[in-house]
Image 1 (tube, one colour):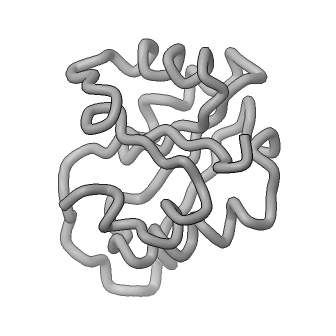
Image 2 (cartoon, helix red, strand yellow; image 1 turned 30 degrees about the vertical axis):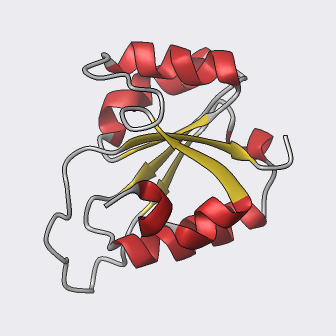
Length: 124
C-alpha cells in the first residue's frame, strides 16, 4: 500500500516522501540517508531509530523522528500529524524524537519492514 494511502492526514498537511518509493533510492546506508535528508532540509522518519542516533547531532538541517514498528498505520498518522502540527520543522533539527505506543498496551504485530521517509512542511 502506498504511503499516500496509509497516511492520509499526514499527506494532506505535509510533504511526506518515501526514500525508496518517491526518490527511488534503494539500499542506501543510514549515513547516506541522513545526508540526503540534510541536503534537502527534511526530517527522517525511520523504524530503525537506533541506527540514526549517532548521526542526529551532526547537522542543524535535519533531525530524526523514530517511529516504533509496533505502531499501527492509523496511530502513526494521528500521532505524527499531532506532533508536527504543534511544532515547526526546526524544532526537530539536530534531535532524536521517539513516537511509540504506551508500554502497558499489547503490541500489534510488525506491519512491514523498515520505513525510511523524509518529510517537510507543505508550506515550504
